[in-house]
Image (tube, rainbow, N blue to C red; front, side):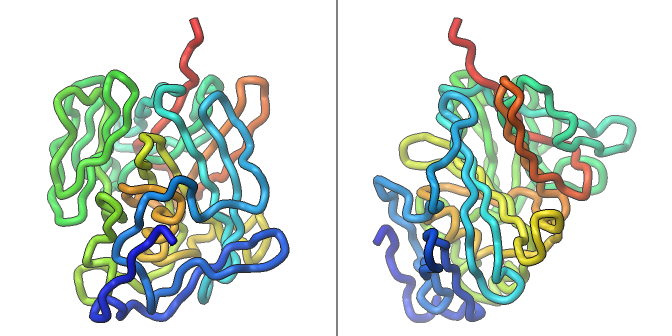
Length: 295
């Protein structure tokens, strides 16, 4: 099944479940009372939409998956972007000059095939470590479920968990929290209440992860209970549910990015096609992907 069950003492999460739409019906894919403590790496992801993903550029696809969850997540759209690192050039974009954080997906250049807000934030700056063009801009933050996301000169994106930062060869990098998956394992604080993480709170979620084959997956939830125009409302999944989503998408390592009203994502083709899921709040840091030149 691609998962291993948690021990009995770990099955104390608030009761909830996730279902996916197959095109004809909703099928259960996860339950909190039998939540796995580890997600294995299947050859094919266990969570996929009812239609084929759409190609954005070489090595980049996007799809929308309909989920049925508990409570306010009863109708949720999951937006999933997959990238082959060597097919794209990943960079960070910043907007925290003059005490303002004013980056939104509207600022993304036309040549970018993906733009998404990155990291977590405090005041007008990103939280924790930030590396820009090979030079450290902000010092590391500390915490038990902190992960560093870095991109090296070869375009490979990696996650380092536990509060460490990326190797010196990283060209771009930032920290975020909390860790959702580390080597396929769900961190202990996400397996039950009272362990330092609010496992019952629901919100719009955004996460980034890597798969065993080195590919990158970005996933964002949108509330779908009142139509697409109100999809940016901060209603959605719990943190344990988002960890499960990333594991079912095939990620072995994953971390949350700033969600809620900050979550925003855009994909576009050089020919003019564009799809955007905006947020309500500007942010200081973003991750952009550009197609690799064939020249």
